[in-house]
Amino acid sequence: MGNLMWKVMAAGAAVGASVVARKLTDGTWKFVSGGDSPSNPEDPDIDIKEAIAFAVLSGAIVGLSRLIANRQATRLYEKSTGHLPQALQQSREAAQAKAK
Image (cartoon, rainbow, N blue to C red; front, side, top):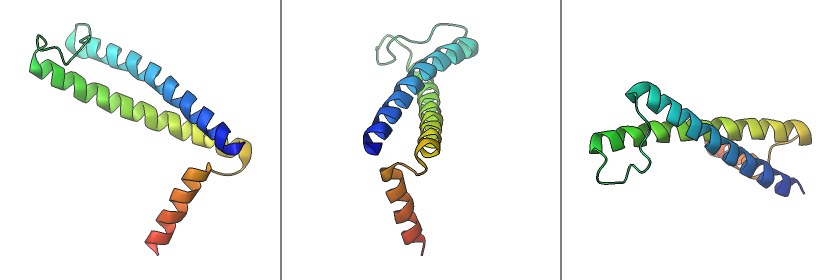
């Protein structure tokens, strides 16, 4: 049951992070460039500099949003169950064993 609960929480965190990231990306792009974000940066009609700048900005925001959402989901899971999700516990133990 715990593993299923963690998968649901992680999926919810990912969905929430993507919604937040999209809003942050659009708002930040509008603030920085003064225009709307490119609907498809892969379109050859979009200037390559604009496409690269948008990719860097959106990648950073998506990465940070996912990191924060996953950390919060992990804290909530640990608080409600008293332990880390199994996959995180195993990676922590592996890192500790490697450090020895």
